[in-house]
Image (cartoon, rainbow, N blue to C red; front, side):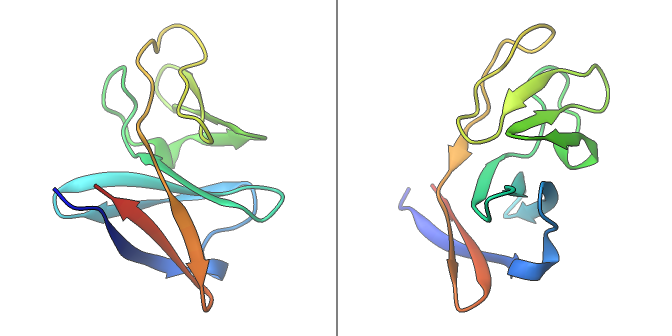
Length: 105
């Protein structure tokens, strides 16, 4: 499957140190805005019990799942410890003309 950039939202639609849920083509993603203005994207469901990460808490570079408090580094997708042990897949993100895009493969 080819990699393509998909429009997500305007840059102001995501608060600093927060995320939004983005559904596209039957898949769910989480798109983050870091405190330094960077944008990142991961799969949108926790790898532990498939809970939407958009309902979770962002702390620095960490997203905490709202159900069992599993944590991931949203920049790398790394699972940070029990109960999560499977990393999140990450996706490139960019901003062009005030719009956030992610590359979905």
